[in-house]
Length: 67
Figure 1 (cartoon, rainbow, N blue to C red):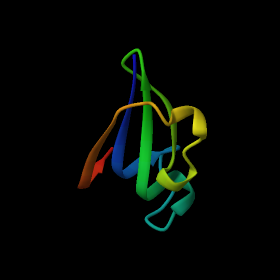
Figure 2: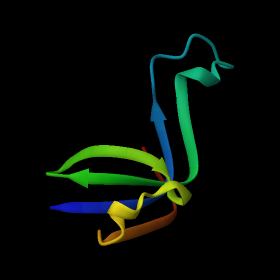
Figure 3: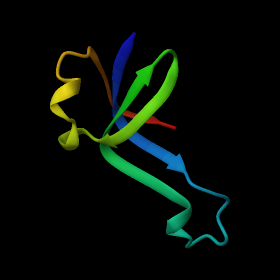
Figure 4: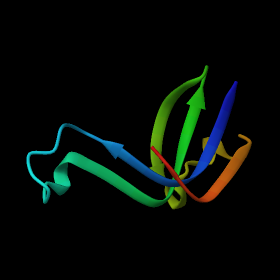
């Protein structure tokens, strides 16, 4: 079963090296997670959703932050 979760998304790529280490995280103001079999399968900007996701139910959690 597939599902989309839309919201502000913050994910971490690695441990920050300093307080200014912007490469250690990714932030999407309007992002979407593709969930398959209770696991995150893909993360991208909401505006970049491919046509193949068009039939998948989307839950919108704005203005909440998803981490």
